[in-house]
Image (cartoon, rainbow, N blue to C red; front, side, top):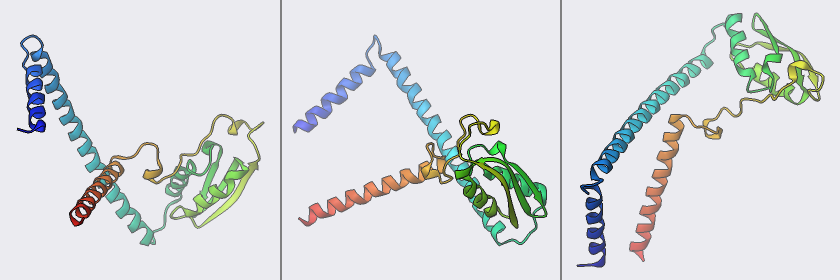
Length: 197
């Protein structure tokens, strides 16, 4: 009998004595059962959220692909909403910007920090359906004295999930799968080197 077998047997015996102790074993078993039920529920909820996220992303990618190859004309109301939805990623005070759309031509007005003008114009030009962008923005070097630029403004941040602070369920699943696959590969590579030596 090896030392490892003795230690394993002692560990199993201690765990059984701990769980089936007449004084506190019932409470410990109930806690263990509750933790197992909670872990099962959390796992199920996480898998459901990941599956929904992946399905929605697939539909979004398909819709974006169809849209890029489509020559449909976009009505001005829809185009206005598309441009407004993108403003928060390009400037720190999107509510200060007035957007007007007429037959695919987007006019941008309002105060803006000078360093954000180029990003805002490029973002507006990249929106599907925009034919031209007219720049009537009022750039300022700093926000002092401009009421609509007061307060702590911030841009929404990068749109890539991997660059975000909180990852979406699908991104989390893909990164986890990549880490596990890398670990399996490295372990098999190390084992192969050990057998070759």
